[in-house]
Image (cartoon, rainbow, N blue to C red; front, side):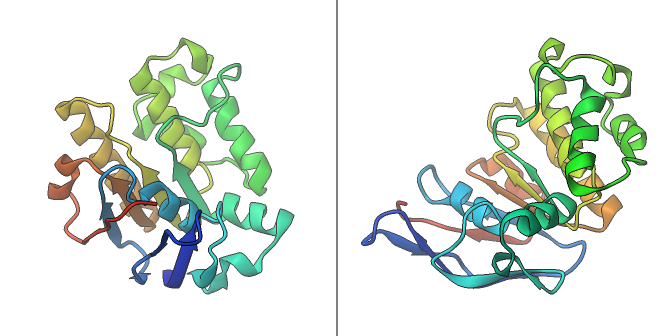
Amino acid sequence: MLVAKNIEFHYIKDQSFIIPDISLNQGEQLLILGKSGSGKTTILNILGGLLKPIMGEILIGGTSLYQLNGASLDKFRGKNIGIIFQKPHILSPLTVEENLQLANFFSGANGGKNEILLKDLGIFDKRKAKVNTLSEGEAQRVSIARALANSPKVILADEPTASLDDDNAEKVVKLLKEQAEKFNAVLIIVTHDQRVKNHISNQITIGGEV
């Protein structure tokens, strides 16, 4: 379902780093561990179609991600990849359900599963609430819901537990795993948080400065 091979990237010519080759089947999970500055978010952005590598190839469901350009790449990404950013990328003036509907609109999805998703994440009762009225934990769940709104084939999460206490960190990881299993999607979590190690057995560790 997801293959990354021969990927190389650098911001500064003499400070390049190589992403380990990755091959994940539908429903498989991967934890990418690394300290701050090791390039975790850069890797996530490359895998998610947000940052074109200098060389190498990303395949999702047999489609070469960076052979797509412009609107084609945007539409493919919106339909097939759900990204949960470290800081919620949701629109605060909109309601919870409007944020999901916006994600549906950009990918051409019908949004038929939005209510079920909100119920699964425990925020159905907040569907009419403006995002700027929610708690931090609720906003994070909206961010997860938006990433999952189009039943993606690949779910990418950037430091989803970084600002959470132990109990809430465990809940978020379990939510991500449950939803990935429900969609039979690839799940990749990138983090420096050692607490996540016990939840996903398939792991790689990266190092070096970016």
